[in-house]
Length: 283
Image 1: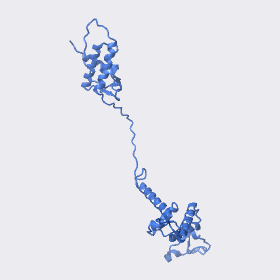
Image 2 (image 1 turned 90 degrees about the vertical axis):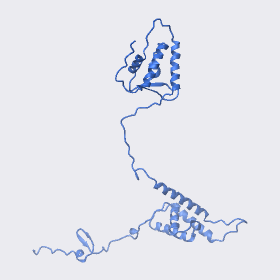
Image 3 (image 1 turned 90 degrees about the horizontal axis):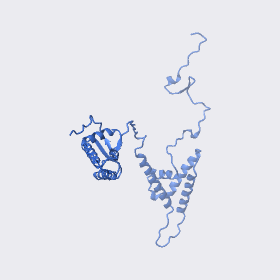
């Protein structure tokens, strides 16, 4: 080692077994003499109060005191001590804390003064009654708030799951009652009687031919109105055959008869596309 090189300083902290801090790599074996620590720097408030009633309730419950038998002298002393401590720590005191301090001092003074004679049959008024009522009411509200907080809360106790479906379900109409179907058929017959005319030639009518016609007219994805399946210019004989064909299709479960609500229009819906058309009757 040359003469110009400096000897390494021993690590006094490691040799002494003490834990010290290092500033810029230099060990600090003692606190700086010019270091200033304010007196309130290490003060920690473990209890926070939501108001003067909360503070009073805390002082009462901490000493297991019955609310109906509050020792006003001791309670006032402890309350004023807390208020003075908050004032010394430069906390902004709300006006309600100071107002409660004045109320406590007034109740304490009224208890120390001689009580005026009460009327016959009545007890002397206790100056603590109003304060006790407010404390009991506040305690009930606080307990109710605690019970509500214990209930399960979304995003705190559990998470909701949402699933989106792209498919839209088709509206299913309720079934038709026989009375509604009979009334709709009576309306078709009444309309046909108005357009009655004489037939000169005899025409062969086929139920299966009408069934094939209705199956071709119906579409699987749409509801057809009941009256649309019957031609307006047809006579009663054609309408009877068409109505029998519709009942036969319903019996074979090829069509579905539905109605949204009582006295509403009746609709016919094709259950599924038929694999073949019905062949007409051959005489």
